[in-house]
Image (tube, rainbow, N blue to C red; front, side):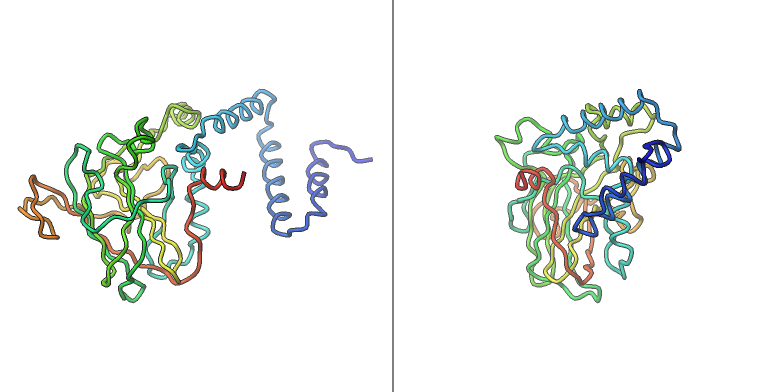
Length: 304
């Protein structure tokens, strides 16, 4: 008869997965159990601490809504999202660096004409974004959908606001690259902002004396056929949180110098009523296969 003590219990649980038909599932479960059990043994975890952990994870789940994914936020601030990204993108071979998707990607971005002001109804310094999508040799990639989204100048994404359901998206869109691989749009200059701190993840950040800030950035998801989907940010040079991003998402290559301009016209020849900023960035795509991610909550709904 087995003795389910602190030394034999782990082996017994691992044996319970012996008949698992999928070898990858079997491997993942075995490694998960080993890691969890080792953690409990190494820390001499108390009943009170385990109860707190269960309560914490329960509250993380309860905080999730169709427009907010607290589990993604937890994964982000623990560095797990960036670690998963890193082990899946070890060989970039000159391709643009990747970073986290984040919890505010809602998908189904509406295709818009080049030059559209995606933040037309928002206050803030105006910014013109001009970008290009190429292969590793610099050949332009035409007809590529590029999703963009970012926070406003108060640090909020549209999906965080109560009027999102009635007024629709803001500061997010989809653009299709032209024959030269280019796309461009108008928006406002994003600012650094705190992750949501009104839930259990924010509670953990504040209790551990970490700041909750992300440096200013624009999200991009580039999905070119025949190439690995690219999920990345472009960060604003000079932001004071570049070295201490709460989700560990900054990479040197993704930091862009944002030029302050006073030209009377923007690069597309249309007038500029006030001084404006220019972001220029080129995305280099790595050949391969892959499926662009769906918003986590949409995936859960479809699978239910």
